[in-house]
Image (tube, rainbow, N blue to C red; front, side):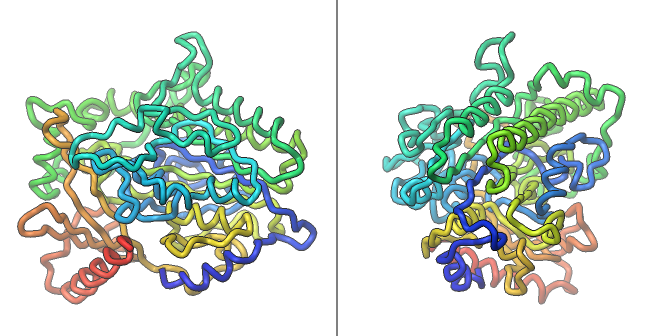
Length: 477
């Protein structure tokens, strides 16, 4: 946020990775659904097999501290397209659709107006409508293709709602494979007299965990490690209102944790299928890169890979997402620009990068000015040598609450957060009085020891309270 003015100046000039190529680059943005930051070999996961993604990271840059500002797919995807915090765009399942005024400043719309050939493949994730909706009623407009702006793309292979992993029937191709074929078809048909921007939004590895049968034997000979905090003692350390809302240990429970992780057998089955779904995406990335090479497009096509949010995998005996712990908000992020010189490839950056940075980065790559309203920053400055004025904290929030009328056991508490490089401050705004958490991520990376009542941290707590107030104001404007 401190870089807003500098970002606007940089965005007004076309980015050039190296002097020999001043063409506007092609851009491929790949998004996965519910993939955590650590579900990647390049991130240090010794079990998962992601050779193509690892190669993409080795050829590009891996952001080791990438986050989403809202850990719910609809809100996160709206933030990715627009570069805005949810508090500003207001798009979530229970709070409303994305307003046309925000969509009109999204990166696909702006790039197409500037002469880019644009395409979308996969799960779009939200509706664009200017119709008021009652709060706390789950919005189903996103399930209707008529509420998705497919006419704003030159090529459309998207679908409303969650989609199905086998849309052609049980004997047909897996959705990940279908989407990859569509991406390859896009590259073959894209006009050569203009640059293109293709957004590929995979359903994988979102539940239901139904991987391509090709990967059914992967991980059959391994046991996936159980998280250190997958114990009742850590569940009992959670605030009572979180324990009650998740109700994982109750007789009537049918929550995420109970269905997916509550026994060793369920945990292994869930995690192996989750990893198998990611294997399909990994292969897709390899096929996409090979297709770009075959079409002689590889030396001028930037690839950005990201997850839309994380999820709990039995940490603290939790499942699902939305809570502002690391498991929910931290995601993989890789940026590959083939125009960069060799010495600027294969890097790993530890700066805090966000989903709201995708739109301004893509606009900057295309040589377009970033709208003054955008909250995110252009990440290319980090790839080309670093930026000592980059953010050192960020705001995230959960404004999504499933209510009792939806008959769901999951009721997510409303909360907002400042995540800094060392400390994290969370306050639950629907509690009376407001409940606060403070974690020292350096000493307590698993967020098990709430320091909000510790007098030694009173100064830190007060500073982060004030910073949260400041960021709430910024995020809403």
